[in-house]
Length: 276
Image 1 (spheres, rainbow, N blue to C red):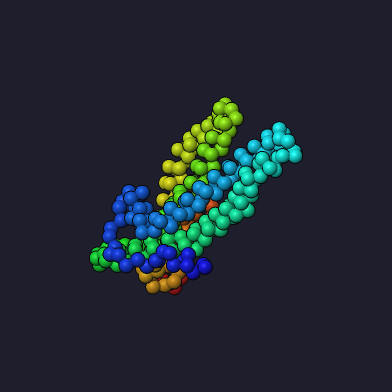
Image 2 (cartoon, rainbow, N blue to C red):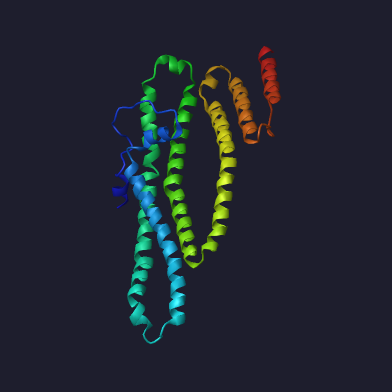
């Protein structure tokens, strides 16, 4: 059963590679258009799960009203059909939707999706000229490919899974409380406005920080650094400097674990040892 879900996406598509767009969402769609049916199924199952949960809350509220005003002798006869329907939803539909959602997410999408991106990016990079590789470190290119695959997967899955679930759940709950009293929607709307403003404030800053950290990781992972030094201590100096830059960017520009002076002292000591 697991193998069937895993075969629904070919991790090594045979289409000819082309240059990805520079903009964010066109870039994401460039690597996603071949697997969008699986993502659509994942989003639909996530939405079904949210609708079922909101419906269950609504049903329990109605059930209390029914029990308060119904005749105990005829209650099962009058409401039996709806009770059976809700039992089927809770015991069959909801667990089945959860199982299918997990299978599509983890067996179909989670492993194959980033591999599709890596394969397409790898084939496109292989078509570059020699000057491209002379002007760029191979390790940095490889790191960017690996990071881009995981970044695209996380962005798309958070949008198609978590964002869809939260949106359906939120607006479903909003409609549910509005059936009781329209003013009960006000706390939900205030919270939603605050959430949007928080995202508008923090997301651009987090994007810039993530970009700087990704560049720092690429600098530290590049394989060309070791080729510049015949002695292993030279590579240690380069790694120390790159690691210091990464720590500084993680800590807001100030490294607490080392400095460029440490690298300079290490380099001076190495030069003194080699001249003796």
